[in-house]
Structures are given as structure tokens and as C-alpha cells.
Image (cartoon, rainbow over all chains, first blue to last red; front, top):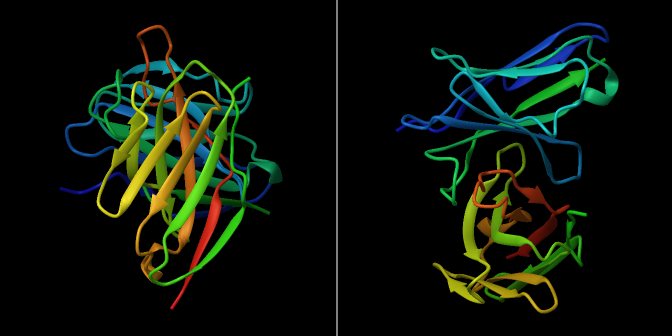
Length: 115
Length: 116
């Protein structure tokens, strides 16, 4: 059973370009979370999605960031007009259900570097 | 506000010793706590969890202790091995009125180094 798959693992963008990060949850998981990790810091919650629905985006920056989890295909975290401060590791996690525990299974992360 | 932090940023131990990693949290509404292990270049890996209605939970070589009175959480690793070297994060979740889900607040992390 494959785990949470994220790609690309590493992405380099120049300031002003767009970054698209993809996440395929574990088989049977319909709940997806995105977290951001700055160097030498803990992970920070960004957004929680179910299929075709954004449940909680309280951790998402108001501008330039968006996320989706379509009926078919992976979840996408999109960052428009990237700036150097967006350089970080972005982790996706999935679970079988949203309420009451259920372990979160994290992917290996996508490391974005903005030049 | 939400805050989960660690007392010690680094911990060095000898192989075979027991390790104790500490964590403090500030929100009394937190109802669920998790310890994660993160190796270099990888995602967090679940170690053990505990609910707020418990004060101790044991796993294989690991024990988590929860002291709600002082809002303190600890992870004990028995007979620490070189493969345990990693960054350890505590995380908590706040009960959102029955709609809790995987929105976790992570601490900064403790670097555990195990010397052979």
C-alpha cells in the first residue's frame, strides 16, 4: 500500500513564477492536509480539504496561495508569484476520516526553493 | 493562544541510554497530543499519541506522559539506538466543539543525537 505521494520532491522557481505542488493521499483516504515547514521550525497547518471541498483554510496566506482536491486526481497546492519567503518544505498528510483522531500519514514533502 | 514548545532544542545520549524529550503546551483546550519523528529530508513519522483523558501511554520502547496540571508532555525512549537519531516534534490538537480533525499545532522540535 503506497503511502502519501508528493511531487515534485524538489522545485526551484524564480521570484514571480508559479509553483504547483501535488499530493496523492494514501489509498482509501479522502482527507488531505497541507503543512508548511520553514528551516529549523515545526510544521504549520495551512489547509484541510476533502474531495471538492475546502474545510479549513485558516492557515493559508490570504494572497497568492490556493489549494484544491478535485474529485479525480491529486490535491494541488498552488503558489502564484512566488517570493523568497515562500522557500520551505511543504508537507501533505492524509487520513481516513476528519473527526476524532485517525493518524495523519505524512508524505516526504516538496521542497521549494525560490531564487 | 496556541503554543506548543519544547524546553531543550538538542539532546545527546549514548546508545543504550534512556532519552526523555519534553514539551510544554499552553492551551488547556488541547485534547489530543502526538509525538512525531522526522529524519533528515523526510516527512514526520507518527510515534505515539495520547488523549487528554489519559496520563500515560506505552508503545514499543516509547512512553508518553501527559501532565495536564502543568500542561507538560514528555516522550521517553528506552534503550535509545543510533537509528533513533532524528528531530522529535510534539503536536497538539484543540477540540473544536466536536469537529476535531487533523489540524495540529507543532512545537519547534528537539534534535536527538545518539552516539554509539
